Amino acid sequence: MSKWLRDPLILFLIGGAIIFWISSLNSGTKDNLLEVSAADINRMSDQWQAQMGRPATDSELSGLIDQFIHEEVYYREALAMGLDDNDTIIRRRLVQKLTFLTEDIAAGAPPSRDELEAYFEEHVERYRVPERFSFRHRYFSVDRRDDARADAEAALTDESITGDPFMLQRTYAQRSLNEIANLFGDTFANALPDLAIGGWQGPVQSAYGWHVVEVQTRRASKLPAFAGVAKKVTVDLQSERRAQANKVYFESVRAKYEIRRP
Image: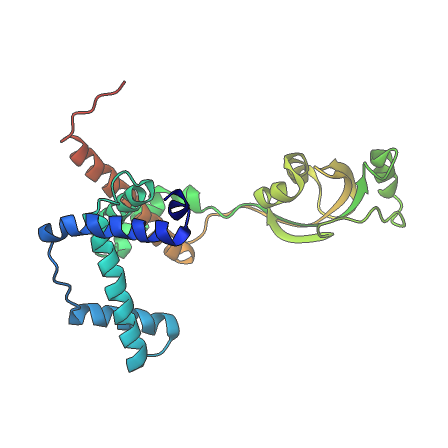
């Protein structure tokens, strides 16, 4: 007997029988009609068209319908067996779907131009184009040299001192201070506004070592015209409306619950 119970095939058959038995207990309480509607077929056909770029053949559409039936049968049986209870993934997915539903309802009609322009004026600093720098540099590694800073200082007046190999670029065009900080570190980025245009200057320290830097151009920060950022303003306003709708919806349904904290 114990040998049988160690046989994987026997265990599989026993497990299958248990699942079938549990399913049969629920069979009388659920609707056993599974109807594939014209709307279901149209939806599957449209999804295929969107993904493949062409209509599904009769054979492919038949396969899609078979797959739909397979998934629906398993879905109903899983619900009947209570497999959705206390499942973290399903819980999060349902929360996500309700959130999306609330956002879709809130989105409604697209905002008018007047609404977009009013939102832009209210949050105009959000769309400010940052100051940008174009520069080149020579790098001096603290790992390769006894005194990298002293060598960098000497390079200010001697262009034959080319410096050390650098893992990033030697020249950068139209980069904001945030972008430069992400590449070289805050100390390097914060030093650039104090450098004059033209000529080698420094040394400037970075997260990698020391550099001599030539600032080639410096483009001042500016506020854009509405037309130049209209698409971003639209996205931001719609996103803000969705967030507000979720907040209002949550507060309205939360009021129905008595919440006890430990």
